[in-house]
Image (cartoon, rainbow, N blue to C red; front, side, top):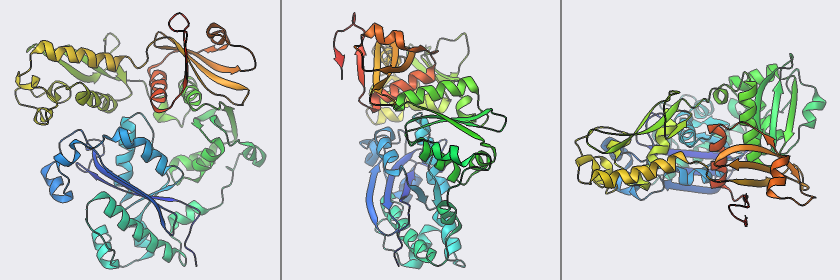
Length: 468
């Protein structure tokens, strides 16, 4: 009997600098895509964690500092990780560890990583009860799984994939509870009419969930609204259970543009303060990066809580996000780790040992040379957007396009414009709806411009060319 399931599984294994997702970093990642019967794709890469690897971790994994020095940082592989795991069930041995580390890594980049997930520790306990141990090493020995290098990401992911196959073979006779729950038939929430549930479109846009009192309880966005609705209701967590109990009505706005949907979602969450959007509605950018002089004459960067009277370089949703952004500038501008994130003067920083820091920590580089680079780094941190332009993206239909207007680096307006009449820069601007600027909005626009090729129309007095 075929073991193929309706799911694709992303079997993931990570190696890290330690056991705390809020503090430690990823040093290696491996993903094995499995259709329930065969491996169909693999990916693995060392990751430069941006921090020192403790000797104990090197002894366990065999991954040294030298091995990761030239490896890509996580943000360079994040897009591939997101695309490979999209529309999959995330599987790992002790899934909480790997899943939380990836969620933190994406959160540091300003993204939310969310996938349905299964733990092969729990699944093997149910499928093969009574074994003396359910650690991966002991299961490998018990089932005779061939492994070349334990505690390396790809080998452990391949071993976990084989373990998944054994579980699915057993599942032909006794289905594990987690898989049964995910394969159950999707039904609309108790208070949502079936005909309205059936009308939810498979389109890009934002959606609103209402309760019986017709209060908006959740606002979201998706490239595929109907698919996202099914994911909400098909998850096995408290949020899904609450949505199933409370959703009585659904509304949506088709945008066609992912960027437009992201901006509109951000604005609507701040405007409506939906009860279930707790994480997004509390994003008030309380953290900031500051640039200030030291008594030794060197400028230093500092991450701290923002105050209204302050003049920070930029503001962020959390101190962790601010530190992650600042970390990315250390290598780019050859900054000193002790003058950016660690603040322990008098000793050479580990970036100096790597040849990145030019010696400001031990006064080998003149302050004026170092400070000149801090000014450039601060400018890079502070200018998420620059100039005057209109971004043009796909619209709800082939006869429309979405436009986002930025003036002097500040978000001004957006709207859907018909493309059947000649358009000028000022003519497009007049058709757009003004919206308030916000750091989150600027961050979303900047991220989208970096990730995707998008048409940009410059203001005529600045440039006459349309940049495609």
